[in-house]
Image 1 (cartoon, one colour):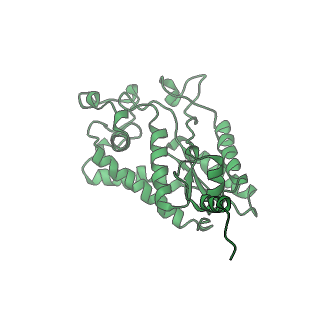
Image 2: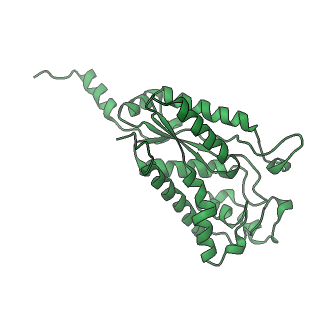
Amino acid sequence: MVLASPRDAHADAHATATPGSVEFAQLTWTEIRDALAQGWTSIVIPVGGTEQSGPFIAVGKHNVRATVLAQRIAQKAGHMLVAPTIAYVPEGGTAPRTSHMRFPGTISIPPAVFRELVSGAAESLRVQGFRRVILLGDHGGYQKDLKAVAQALNRKWAGTGAHVVYLAAYYDVIAGAYAGFLRRRGLGADVGMHADISDTSLMLAIRPDMVREDALRHAALPGAAQGVYGGDPRPATAALGQVGADMQVAAALRALETDKNGPVSP
């Protein structure tokens, strides 16, 4: 019997170790190489956004939610990493200022630039060995762009063994199952389009320090002039938000399980 040298044994142990984190940015290039060799060939690109969310929620809400929930999804799915979150997205025009760009605290890029950014990130991941690139968007304004990027890349990547998943189910929960849950709780009048009870509850569940809760509890009903579009954020609670976050994670996992191309990872 031939015994492995200490150097060979160390190399073998290193090659079979699992990544210490699902966060791509927290790994070294050699750890990413080894993870790929072990079948960690799925990766999520979380997409957030930097925008005003009324007087009571910090402007980085989408980035935080996309990051935290993408990590939960990856941990539950297994053999999946999470790329750095894209924080710059289309949020309205700058000349003239439209949509969320009418308020301080918003950063916007043109839709075409956004699509190229997402495409370039996905292509970078494909060429180093990732076989399933998952686009997870936490904001409604660019969902159509993520879908278009996924369709274009899947055409381009045909025959390469790699594919893109546009994870619409993650975002669709907010206006669907989660809004239905809130309405059944008698909170239908509080559900709006932006910075409402659902937005605020999700932040209280995921990062309560990003909600100015004392001001929220003592505020008059905010409206569009304050950046709150419909509904009422004041009844928001962390318990309500945890339900929504759990729904988003569960919906994402179900969608990945039924990915028509199949789970590429073991």
